[in-house]
Image 1 (tube, helix red, strand yellow):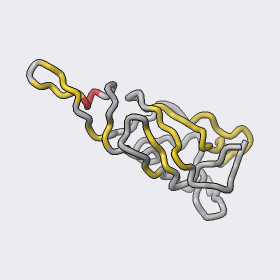
Image 2 (tube, helix red, strand yellow):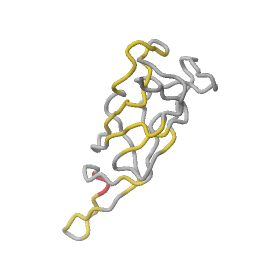
Image 3 (cartoon, one colour):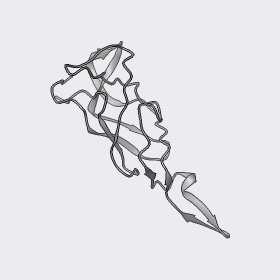
Image 4 (cartoon, one colour):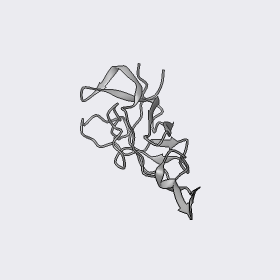
Length: 129
């Protein structure tokens, strides 16, 4: 069974510089044994739940293309994550504030074609189905 994701979990993007900490607000007031809020399917708000991953290396990101004379040149720029869909797959039975709990196997996509995944769930003792 996959583990639940909580505040402080590490997220990573295939086009980002490295894993960064996820922020989970305690809106549903559901905590694990170490008093960290547990993430839900809807915790995919850019720059709040999903952090910037340093430098974006996506060729789909228009900010990464600079004009040098008449020729565009690829120059990686700062990451501005824009997830386009809720986390999936999620727990079928465990609900947090009426929303399915996010799992360590959950993924989302960035508008710049990046695949955002969980690197470390932040929990080792809470599993869900």
